[in-house]
Image 1 (cartoon, one colour):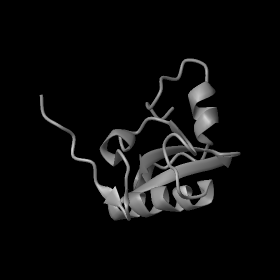
Image 2 (cartoon, helix red, strand yellow):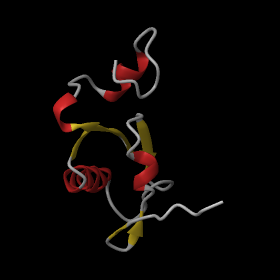
Image 3 (spheres, helix red, strand yellow):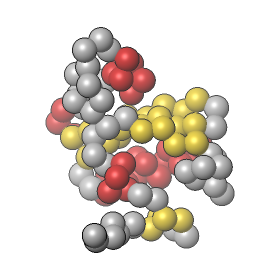
Length: 95
C-alpha cells in the first residue's frame, strides 16, 4: 500500500488530494485546521484551487468551512450544502 503525499501550506499539512475529488467537504476548526481562522482557511482553499487550475465553492458557518473543488468551466453556483441536499443527487456528481 502506498502512502498519499500530503502537500504543505505554510507549516501545516492538509490532505489536498483527498479534498480535490469533487465531493462536498466540511472542515472544522480544531479538527481539520488549527492555528488559523475559518476565513483564513477559506482563503487557503481558494488559493489551492487557483494553483491547480480549478475553482472552489465555499461557505463559512461558525467554526466550520464547507467547500467543494469544481472545474473552472463547470462551476455550479449553488451552495455546497444545497447541492448535497437535492433529492436524487449523489454526493459529488455536480447535480
